[in-house]
Length: 272
Ligand code: FES
Image (cartoon, rainbow, N blue to C red):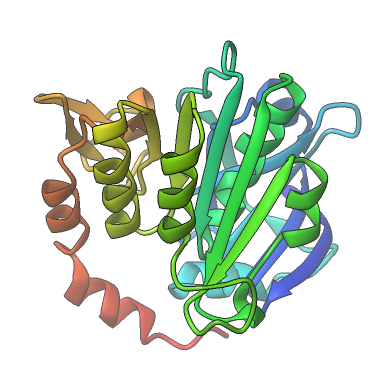
């Protein structure tokens, strides 16, 4: 059992919890994720470790309530327990050797972006962070990102804060004017595809973090398979970060829509 020792509401449907998990905190690196199960009968869901404190033995998870299980998780409070957590899983991200990095995230993708921004910043790279949401109320982690980046740009779809438009508009201007070593994009699949298409003509290496459907998270079921550079890869053990210029995004989008009807049925269930 894993105890929740702190909880914050970052936006109406975005929550942040600190969980006591010393063994996982001791081994996690930016890019790793965990699989958690809230109770005995619950489904396992993958969530990125947003931050960790090795000394205190704590991992931080930021999640958006998008389905039944994340809504259930959002109802847990400080002092409550999570039944199982397995991790750290996946490959951590290699952060050495980059001078100037752009990290951009859309919506709850910003939560997954946070450990990458922090990691590059701590390695001494010049970090430009770009975050966006539909409206200013849905923006998360602005203050935190400002502390661990050299420049922070904000975009909102309705223009209520920062640039009126998309995070990709800001990236387009930066690519036009500056030499960038690496772009890291995390968010909805169409956004990661758009970023990869945008950076390709500039020859700028681009890493995306894929949100494939996962069942076991350990390479056993094949549910999370993606095609990268013409080869089948498992997001849970080979990723979740991959070269965006090599990912077959069309196939990923089709696979993500595969269980739409079943997910709609489950998500209609009342959380009690
Ligand atoms: Fe089963 Fe990746 S989740 S192989």
